Length: 132
Image (cartoon, rainbow, N blue to C red; front, side, top):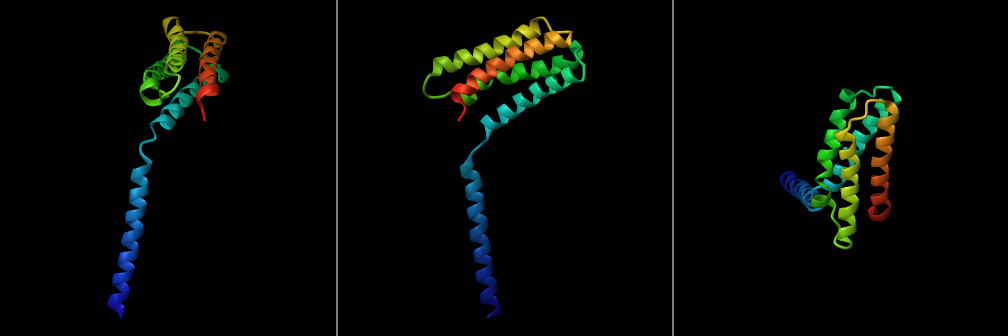
């Protein structure tokens, strides 16, 4: 009797484990969420630097460069099936806003805040149209 109970218990645990594994595999990668979280992290980091009055180029250039690198992945990861040209234009607008800040890195908090507002407007325009 004891062995039968252990066999049944082993089968139940195996079925539960297999089901959990298959569910995890079927969910697929979370690239879109990860990309947006990383972009948000760097944008928030720059915002915190502005509030802390840490607005030198060396304080914020790494975050801006990371945001620019991540923006290259917008189309490959997030490109919608419909209205592809509009999405590409909005992604290009975001890159242009970041590029403007990288071309002439802001060294004052006012300039950095103004540049980040332009980046935020580019992000918001896309989010209003495509975010679910």
